[in-house]
Every structure is written in structure tokens, then in C-alpha cells.
Image (spheres, rainbow, N blue to C red):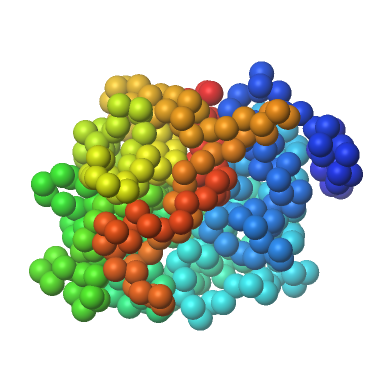
Length: 389
């Protein structure tokens, strides 16, 4: 039986206006309640008018799941379940999902279904979980074995794709395959680490084209030309979340922890005095570059969790705290009713496609910015939870 959506907040417009979010609550709950206040139904996140299976909902609702585990508050569970039930039909199909697109972005929302299946035993959830695993089974790959980002982007691995596919893949293989696919999961990180890492800075490029045929790809390395903070953030979150499932005795686990240390040490050198990071990571002072909230939130989360779990030295907890302080002091606005807004998030960025995205510095700094973008709100909640803020 579903309980009331949540106490003190109804769809009556007058009550919505009267609803106050207490400043005494932790930042994690203040952000979650602000999201719920703006979006009565979870599918409405990111301005959606109809239910849509999408990675941004998966990201935000994964943060809600962590918040639910921490607070034991039923309203967060109900919000997650409401999204799944809005997207998944009675027969276990998702109208908005197209298997044949082989879009790895579509896998990550499947993470919320493991707990929903555990708590309800609803076969619809398991059907979708298995369908997403089937997508990974058939996902086109580079010759060296890396998942293509999408069918329309042949031979390309993007940093984003590691978060989209690997944490789901890791939880699935642990639960249903006795860990049989951990080597394949590690290989995805190995390929990106080997091909997308810049030897000079230690940062990772947004994309790698194994064929080196894309106009944006360097003809020698196959890499895109710039470092985009959010893409590195996706990669770091993928590492710390995948490590939740890798057994301590697995031979590849130490390798993944080394990757996390390498990128964390490299990123710390580019942290602004504000605690934040720039949209184009290594070009802090350059005209048009700006302190960006989604990448900064992702870095804060990954570093805090890495330090909490013992993957990273304790000093990275301080780096994360400085980043979180920068977010709350510079990029968070609080309304009279307590609703909070996170500003200066890059709305979207990619490579190739139509219209064509060339990965240039000018391209990244001129993509539109957006308040309360879910790529910022979800990681902000995750960072707040790890930092107990």
C-alpha cells in the first residue's frame, strides 16, 4: 500500500506556497525536498511533461535511494517507486526505451530497480533489469572491447558512458552472475585510462575514438581536444560506485583504486581557491570559462566517498569539504520558503551529432547553463550525504 506523498505537501497550490523547507535540515534533504517541491512526480524532473526513461532521473533517484537509506523516510522511497511505475507498463515494458538504439545512457536508471525488486518482488522490475543486462550483452564494442557510447557514435567511448553502464553492470553481475563479468567491467576503465589520459596533466579527455575518424578526434591519439569537468566527474563517480560491488580479493580492484587516486591527485591541482572547478578543467582564468556546479558536485562526492571508504587518503575529505563549501556559499540560492536552487550548471555537452559538436574550448564554454540541472542536484545530494552536511 502506498502512503501519502509526503506530510505537509499536497498538490493544492496554496499549500505549495505555504510549504517551508527548514534551514535546520541537512543540505541533502533540503535539496531533495526542493526537487520534490518543483516536481510533484519524479518523471517531471528536467522539465519532462510525460514519463521518460532517462539517465538524469536515474542519477537523481539514486541519490534519493541513498537519502532514503540514511533517513529511513518513506516519502523518498515512494518518489522513486512513482517514477518506475510511471515509466514501466503493467507488462514490464518501457514505451520510451528503444533497445535498438544501444544508448548506454539508458542503462543507469536501472540501478533504482534492484531495491524496488527486493522490496516488492514485482516481476516487472526484474524484467527491465534483465532487458538492460541484455542491452549490455549486445552493446556494440570497439575492436579492443570497449562499449560504444551509442549506436550512432561508432567506435567511441565517452567518459560519461562509464557511469551510465558500469555501476549497474557491477551490481547485476554480483547479484545474478556470481561476479562473472567483473573483468569486463574493469576492462572498460582500463581502456579509458590507457587511451584518454593526458600524460602532462593526468586529466582525462571527454571522448576517445578508437578509429580516429571523427573530425573531433586527434589523428594520433583519437582523443577529443579538451577536458570537460563533468565528464571527468562521471568517470570518478563510476569508479567509486563500481567499487561498492568489487570483492576485496578481486585482482582488478586495486587497479581501479589506483585510477581513482591518479585522477583525484591531478584534479586537486586545478581546484580554484573558491573550492570549485571550472567548466573546462585546466583553463581556469581563460575568457568565458566559469565555475561549474555539476562537475564540482561530482568531484566532491567522489572524493568524499573515496576518502570515507579508504580508497583515497584522508586529505581528500578536506578537498571535498572545500568544494562543498564553495557550492553552498557561491552557487546555491535559498528562497524565502527555504527552497534551494543550484546555479551555473552546464545543461548538456557532447561530441559529434547534429548540430555538430567539435569539443573545442569555445564549444564547452558556450553551451547553455541551467539552474537546478539534475546533473548537479543529484551529485549535490550524494556529496552532502558523504560529508554529512
